[in-house]
Image (cartoon, rainbow, N blue to C red):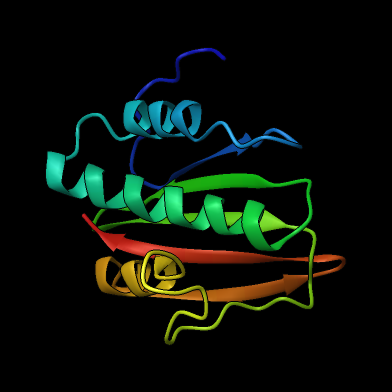
Length: 131
């Protein structure tokens, strides 16, 4: 993967995720570089949100999967696409026990807003983190 330049305001970029096994470290490196000039706390929040969204796409949905990052002046928007339209996420109590199933709670706490958009054959889960 080529090393991207820092993403300027109002710019948007796409990263296709591997089909079978998630390479979350490569995704985090890519995003960290794109947002390299942001304060560390903002960058870490965006990285955690991206990791949770991508992990959910592998755990609960079918591929292909992709991550988009769009930088605005005062926030960063992250979008993760998958191809399972029926499984919309639910914010609530974990059905997976004490150690799993809390990703959306983290996303809701770190993001100024989040949501879903359906498209033909899939969905996009998105979140916006204040910058």
